[in-house]
Length: 196
Image (tube, rainbow, N blue to C red; front, side):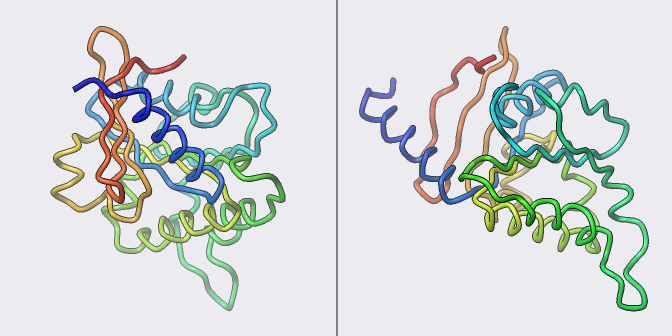
């Protein structure tokens, strides 16, 4: 069924509310990497918009392809090596959490992206790091987006979507398309072309 004008207006208002209070989005879909990179650039905000952008890279990633403009880049491999000793902060607290916490800006101005959460979810030692990152994003009313190259069914089976405010599902059907899922509202949008 085609959404009504009122449905679209309510969805836009919901997205604005999430932006104002801070939110974390799980980006899923078994689609080619170019679609995920395009979604990432859009979620980081327009290139000329005043944003604090932080990209956490996992694996062999070219950061410029994920960011629409300048931003800080942190290699997740650095964050997950070793453990705090002698009372020192762990690598996450010393880098990502501090950068996020230092943001003093209007809601939605802090944008954090993670190119792949798969390794972080599969390792019990790094799951708390992911949780702390999501908390830090909400604390500054920021927007975090976390990519997982998996089908929505797989994500639901594993319960990965829990702890995220919304799920953005991607696919390529001719052109790149997206569909939003907001579990707390039992809301699913129709597939729409992804904005450039």
